[in-house]
Amino acid sequence: MTTTPTVGVLALQGDVREHVEALESAGARAVPVRRRSELEAVDGLVLPGGESTTIDKLLRIFELDEPLRDAVKTGLPVYGSCAGMILLADRIEAGIEGQRTLGGMDVTVRRNAFGRQVDSFEADLDVVGIEGAVRTVFIRAPWIEQAGPDVEVLARIPSHASDGSRVAVGAGKIVAARQGRLLATSFHPEITGDARVHALFVTMVRAS
Image 1 (cartoon, rainbow, N blue to C red):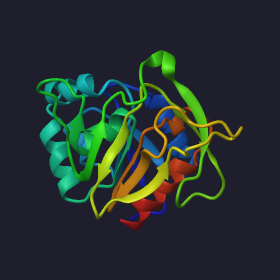
Image 2 (cartoon, helix red, strand yellow):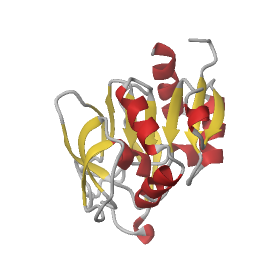
Image 3 (cartoon, rainbow, N blue to C red):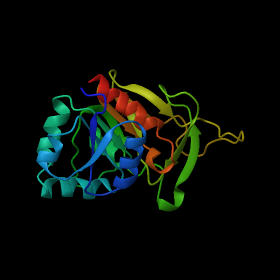
Image 4 (cartoon, one colour):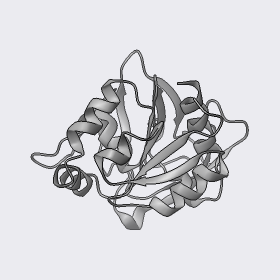
């Protein structure tokens, strides 16, 4: 592994540019990935947010679904944000008929768990492996309903907000997790200007 790893960002839908900028701030060389040859040239990969069912269809159209599934199985470090979390999950609740995932993480993810676009919100969360609170943004976000024994929980929605009021939706739900070389968050760290989550992933890539 070189000092500066090459990390791809799946560039079929979602916040590709923002992830590229965050990865470069975290010390990686970031490149978009749309083809199998580009996938084979990276040391790690980010699956950005977007619409999970649309990304699933585009992966099939671009013939990237099976190569990506194989890459996950053979140990490529992958970070999935929001819809990317859904793609990494072994199981989905509230998915649509025929929706498939890449799998790899022994988790059950509930799609659109926090509600519609109008229900988007921000919160400061403690994330294992990152010093200090992380500002997180949730947009039509999933959460993890169940995690297997090999999954490390990195963050949960607290039962009370910072002002002391009780959290109405999602209290206690898992919103960040890691299993081996796979990292997943319900939230979008790429749009806050804080690259610490990406730095955590780049550290994982270097360690691989």
